[in-house]
Length: 256
Image 1 (cartoon, helix red, strand yellow):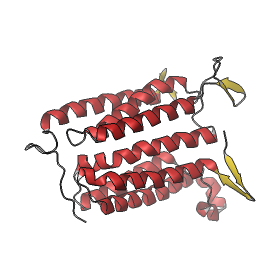
Image 2 (cartoon, rainbow, N blue to C red):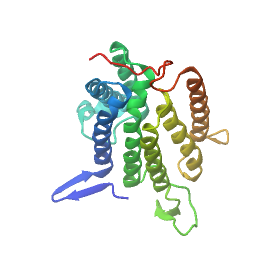
Image 3 (cartoon, helix red, strand yellow):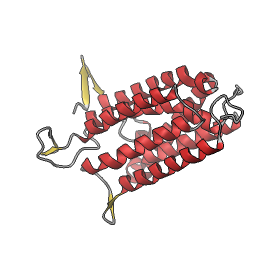
Image 4 (cartoon, helix red, strand yellow):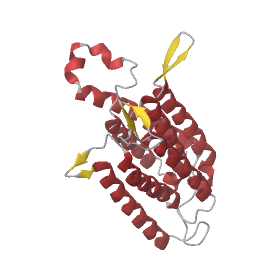
């Protein structure tokens, strides 16, 4: 773990820095590959900016509402630069809703747009896992295996590194598949299937899982998403012709 990176007299929160770096590199990757899917890169840049800005605001407001008593005593703390004072789920919901509204206003085609965003999402997952390794979040269950890592007072599975390795492999598969894509939606749903399958398997090594009725919540969600993505791939493959065929894939010019 390396939660704080000392740069001269400055102490930089490394997990937050890695997330910011991941956002920037992901946006660059999305812009470079947008043309493959018939989507204007500038439109995608604006979509990402709107989604990110709305997500950050939603995440901070969600955290404030969850800890209203604390912020009621010091309202100025709402505007603090504390990178841990964010509610990830609420931020994701608000950011996605804002991006969907913008995409609808611009009449962006659903599946080509999701395909265009997929390489960036796969790259961002790598940096999220790096951030969790740096912070110690998403830690592993206790184990006596030779490669166990000492964390929180016990030898544990290096669950963050398992997830990091999986996300790197998934990113490479996504980049390989992008050049061989046969129909719109294939890339996005393939990434979702791979990511869900990896979470389903790797959650067994986590030591911080939320368990409900004897089931790990993340594994149940991963199984549902895996089944849904595989079903979606099957349906889209039947309904759409290969890219460039008369059946079409929904790729086309996008308004600015």
